[in-house]
Length: 409
Ligand SMILES: [Zn+2]
Image (cartoon, rainbow, N blue to C red; front, top):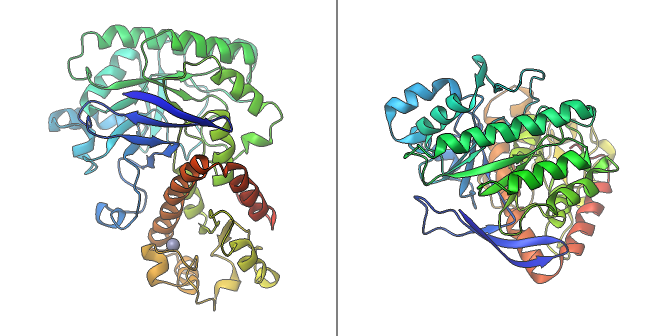
């Protein structure tokens, strides 16, 4: 993998990734998001349904939690995870943990890291970890890391987390020298250190000194916590100081469940690659993205929604609506008027409300299509906005839409 920055706008990097390996001809523009998957497929969507979504990201993240226990079967299959899961045209990026879940804490030590799937705990030392990756043959893979930390973690544990992660990385690099199968795969180093500036910067400097192709910033929360990291006083400055220790020519990745507004903020701090776990989290709650990303907003959804806010329960937000609310009962508009996704082209809010009320799985299929469609579209708008110099306007517009009533993230 190769990464280059074309232009820096408001602190954010407009860049491009040459993924290399079997995707030698591809060029991926950043800022970008990856396709969030559950056990190797897009949540709620079979392969045929996923194809109805526009702007599907080139890179699909697959967390080891639900997959690692099956590595022997995938090894026998012999063609790697992409072919095994029908996402063979995507760049496969294996990560340790499912970005939508909290990590079960206290199971990592200097010998290895635990990941969790439906079958329970699966603990890997560097040797087993490389064996799993050889079975999966990913294009990119996250280095084994001890990210079981958050803002409450004490210094002693943070030092251990950084040390463990660096030791795992050194052992892995040693093992990779012997691996023909992973020769063309890109190793993504993990940056740890919780909320401690010294440890964060040590982790960043030491990891950069090793031959990794990019960086995954983790260890701010134990898996998905639902916390808005930007609401914490020192998060932004800590992230900035951490990124300042990383080289310019490698991408920085964060898998936090971030709304479009939070993505704009993180992009301006220097993050290049994001997860699309946020639209999945909304879908699970029966909610839909309805933000307007045009500059200036053409018909702000904030205005549309405020017309209906008196009788909605719970009140509609300007950027997210809740399809569980009774106000949707006779609302025959699409989820987002003007959206050209399969869901909005064919179904009404009233119908999705009915599906949610009767616990029909189709509700989640349709909402996943719409939410992915809108989130992927947002990244096109973010890149355009950065190119055209309207990033501040985009942020202001999203802030206004978010403040029109309670936000759900
Ligand atoms: Zn739609």
